Each structure stands twice: as structure tokens, then as C-alpha cells.
Length: 407
Ligand code: MN
Ligand code: MN
Image (tube, rainbow, N blue to C red; front, side, top):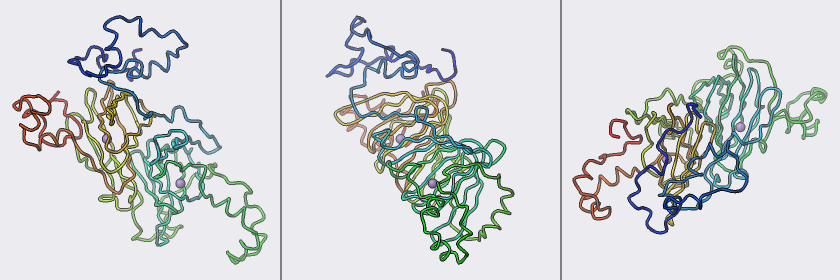
């Protein structure tokens, strides 16, 4: 395997462990060089095994087990229609993901995700192409916007919207609903409401003759091929967009990073800089080859991750103690429960990019290095049996991403 996504870090067994874990010892540390015990005699799938080196041979520091925190849109069934497709990971598919449900959708040029609304809020990040979105705010004021790769949108629960792919390549994006039970198939489409309302009521509601409704669709359209829209300004005028409606989009990848160093960058969006996003906070992370998202945790929400490019390894530290290491690639999804310690290491030769999504109005994290550097050094030294002079070399603040020059 020589492709660029093959992990290049040293195999775990070459990393010094200094005897940890002491009790109970788990994993290959128990073999004491005798590999007979690690033989696998049953059916194997080398393709899947190649994707999960940390599952096949966990670092000696792992201590099992905790609920699966890996899933992927790459294994999710794709619902295809003329106009586009979608696939999703709800809590029914991915048990740990009870705060966020994810959808990966593609809309061809002109392809329309029909007018609809739902009982949960919708956050999304554009990953490819260009999309036109329409919505209403709480005061009934219209928005019509074009978004492209790196932009996010947020529709509060219950507010109606549509999404339409634009040329030349359509639009691909990932949606996060602020409820793990929400599905792209349990929404409220406008066509269904028309089809399931007596026609005399429709006529009375809109003040028109009944036969106006003789050709309405009897089944919802969900995703369908429509005509590609024209000029954005013309659509805004036609929809009577007025100044003053609340911003529903944020150009995340073009925003100023809160962290930027030789190891990578972090950009964020929450209700402090994107006021409408009252239930979803976001961090967009890039990690250079050899770099690492530092050891940290989040006190206010579970972290739902979507890997946009590259390859990664993450260990989740849980009570017990438990520690489980898993590998991630582009298209994969991870979930880290709130307060559980974790790091994310770039294991490839390319930039690693992923997005962290939290069901919260604000982004919060606790950095292990920042904590340990804000304590009397003697206090820390007595816990870890590390010389206070060595502790003084630790970072003195939150780094977000570990700078390469310090490694
Ligand atoms: Mn929606
Ligand atoms: Mn995190």
C-alpha cells in the first residue's frame, strides 16, 4: 500500500511504553514476543483490516472497552433520485450519536431538496460546489443565499427552507441535526401537506378556485431535478428579500482562525460570532502532516466529527479507566462524549481536515497542557513524578494544535 492515506506513523509496538499499563496489562504487551497467541484463524477481511491498524493492533496503553465511536458515510446506504442523493447516520445507525444526526447530500446543478421544515435545527457545511438556499426567519423575512465549500448554514428548528445545487458541479454538503433521532426522511415537505389537505381547504386558504390544484403531486418530491436558478440578485428580488433579516450563513473557511501555527489551524463558529447558531457550535480544524490536535476535552457537549480529508488516529480516554484508539479517514464520522479526553493525530502525508460539531450555543474546551501549566509545579510534579524543570518545558497555555517545531 503506497497511497497517500496509508498511515505512516511508527507502528504502536515500536513506541516505548515504560511498562504502562501496569494493571491489567492488555493487548500485544501480553505476548512477550510469542505471537502464537495473536494468531487469527477465522475468516478475515484484509481490506477492512487495512483501514483500522489501531483496531488490529492497539497501542499497549489502550484499555478496553467502550461503545463504538467510529462510523462513516462510506458505509451508509445512499438514497438516489433524479436530482441528487443523500445518505445519513442517525442514532439508529450509530448508537453513541444521540445529540447529532448527520446527512451527506449531493444536489446536481438544478437538483432541489424540496421546500420543507423539521422539528430540529439544521446546521450544514458545504464541502464541494455551490448551493442556493432559501429560508424564512422568525419574523417571516426571506433569505436567499449562495454558499460554497467551507461555508456553513444554520436553520433554527421549524423554519422552512430549500436547497438547490448550482452549476457547473452541483453541491455536496454535510448536515448535522441537533437531535440524533432526526432523519432526512422524517421532515415536513410542502408537497405532502398539499397532497393531504382537502382541495376545498386549499382553495379557501389561498383564495383561488379548486381546480388550480388538479395537478399537484400526490407523493412528496424529496429531491428532484428542477431548472437551475438564474442570477442571485434576481432571485432575491423575486423573493422580496429585505434588509435586516438574520444571517443564516457564515463563511467559516474564510474566517480568521482562533488558532494558527506550524501544526495547523482552528476556526470556529458559535452564537458569539454567528448569532443564529443557538444550538450548534463548530470548529473547523486543519492539521499538518506530523501534527496533532492537542490532548483536551469539552465540558459542555459531545463532539461529533466529520473527516473532510486525510487520515487520523484518535484515542478516547474514558472513566474506568478505558482508552480506545481508532483510525479515521475522509468521509468517516466520530463521536466523543462530553468530558472524555482525546487527541487527534494526523497519520498521513497530506493535510488532515475535520470539523467538530457540538450541540451547544458556544464552543468550549479544556486543554490538558493549559491546566497543568496553571498549577503550582511542585503539585503537578508529585502527581506525575516528573521533574518540575521538565514540567517548565510543557506549553504554558492552550495550543489547540501542537506546533510542529516543538515536536
Ligand atoms: Mn432540512
Ligand atoms: Mn475535541
